[in-house]
Image (cartoon, rainbow, N blue to C red):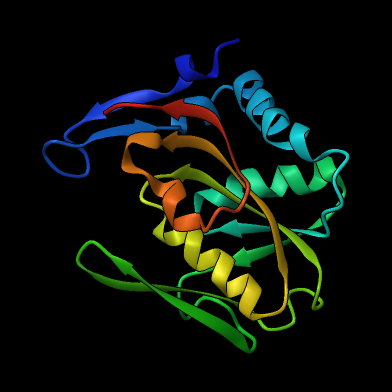
Length: 173
């Protein structure tokens, strides 16, 4: 099955001139969703990974079944104010302003090997902030894995040469 066939293009969303890649059509098709999760897991089956860090919010959709498939726990990376215990925070730049991600300070042990999961790599700002957050807390980022990559936005350049895998890659807009 070609997973790309299960991604819907939505023109002019969230604003005019943007062609949005909608994954809800893939998520609604169990065989396609299962294949996507398997494809995201396969490169890491024989790799020493301690935890999966899932970026809010669609990273949770892929990270949770991946953690069950790989037999490891997950670490939620959330927007500020969403986690109940003591957190560590990383701010990052957006096109117009800044945002931040937080995780619990006790989400993993120092030196643990972490796989960062999200649905989409676009400009790379959120993914890079996730890596800095994990490294600031003493974790080692093993790799990133994304369902989709908008390669024409050059998001990999912000990831500091860390390993980065994507299942579906769009080379032009």
